[in-house]
Length: 345
Image 1 (cartoon, rainbow, N blue to C red):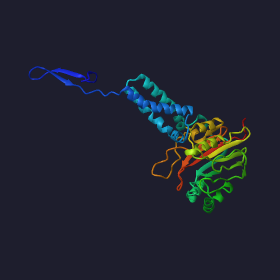
Image 2 (image 1 turned 60 degrees about the vertical axis):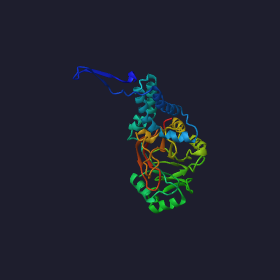
Image 3 (image 1 turned 30 degrees about the vertical axis):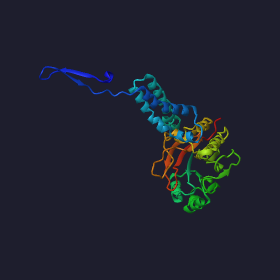
Image 4 (image 1 turned 90 degrees about the vertical axis):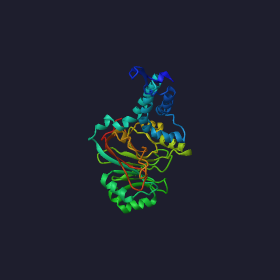
């Protein structure tokens, strides 16, 4: 018998006055080897996330699960403590802090987002229409209810353009710059205010990504880019990364907004690199950055956040809402923004 794991309770008693030996319950111990087995995968994930080391299709897709891994990183911390391994516990603690600090701010928001109420309103709605299969009446009803100034659509087919017109979108958003096409390729911008197409702004790598200039009354002109990159699946992963890297950065003399289906989350290094060039994620600013947008309308609830409205840092974010549309596997993202009257350099 392993005496290290058994306590002996010795008590006197019994009819003959003898000694009764009662083994105590076996202590439950966790081996240090098991602790390291639990800690190592989370630690490696944290290193890959913080250093931006994801490479290839599968690691890139898995990286979207970082919020769930961050929540699960508390488990190896407990295992390390039960194993009484100071080293394993310390590594688990650093891992949990690294992952938590990467994820938690998205649920808290930024203090800068509280400075709302001033500036010209601009409301932006983006929706992936799933090969033109979304419910056109539901799209128009959402436009009627939210009253966006600009609607950015992805996977816009010619047939979907006709159905949106039949549902009455022209009466709500009469101006348009469309590049409709079959399948996933088509995209299009609808606007309450006049739009001027902006050609040659950047090298388009991915699906159609029309850009246009809109000038809301009382504001400087704003460039809107309808983003739809490739999905990082198989050999397309290189085109996905190059497509995000090719998106135009903010410009000192122009306000710029990128809205659409990036097929990327804020846990991807290439997306963080885009933000570092001068953008903020609107949902992240107001504590909605962990609200998942894909897949929608299926048996499982949405699990990852790949649809975004990215805004110039000079733009204030007043409110963000995530909305389900029937007939598509993406949830729509609505951002209520405030534009500066003058551009600060």
